[in-house]
Length: 131
Image (cartoon, rainbow, N blue to C red; front, side, top):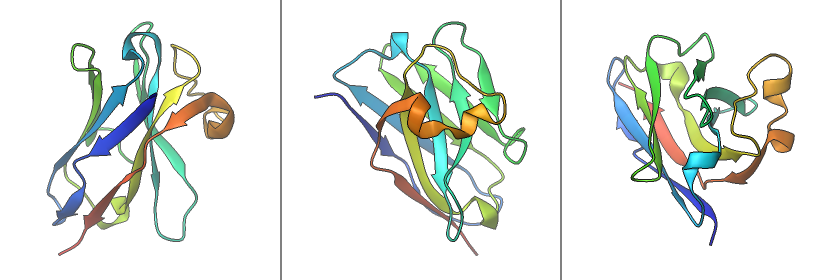
């Protein structure tokens, strides 16, 4: 079965850190870019990061740049999102998704066309940042 499973969410205080994982099964991450998205309360789903398989390039939105780091371990068929210096506005359900391509599409407005660019989605993991 082709699927992605996220783990690692939870409750953390502002300034804290979490590491999310996105484990793939039924396919190899070697051939696909993987994106991370989040859906915050009262907000639209937004892409926050992506890692290409073709060249290993990594992409971030400005609001997480310098705080979040995406990585992949192809031997474990898993992508990670290390989140540091978390803020209340990072509270959201976080999803990973498989791109239809090996290279991230990150230029605007195209990276927002996630329904067209990604075909497999995880179930999401909740991240709450609160004191």
